[in-house]
Image 1 (cartoon, rainbow, N blue to C red):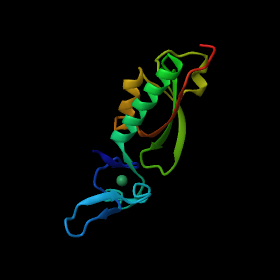
Image 2 (cartoon, rainbow, N blue to C red):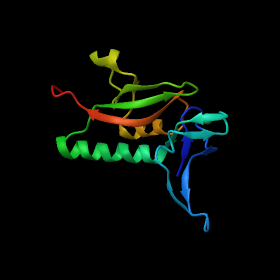
Image 3 (tube, rainbow, N blue to C red):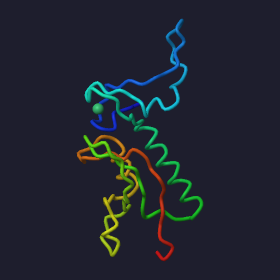
Image 4 (tube, protein in one colour):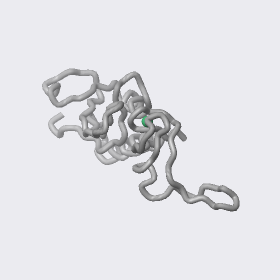
Length: 141
Ligand SMILES: [Zn+2]
């Protein structure tokens, strides 16, 4: 399990949880625990991201898309947070390296779904995919 700070991508983070005081066993994370986390590196409250859960959600959504439409999606709209910036933005990722007429709309080109998932964990890029919103493929393609 890798839960990181969405701003600096450090793993030295804390969040609220329900704990059995006798056994110290963590029962579950409290509601909104990740939205109200604490990052030691930033020295302040930050939104925390479970990178494994983000990747799992991308896989599930990709499988569902393929099952429903019988084809692979060409685009993914993902929530992105830039390193050391407080804002979140919904950005379009193309799941192909082909530059076409859609170039103005594309934030980032990925070489397929595998490449997209590498952006949901800390990478050389200055942003992190914090959530997949949805996949799509224009009907004319
Ligand atoms: Zn941080």
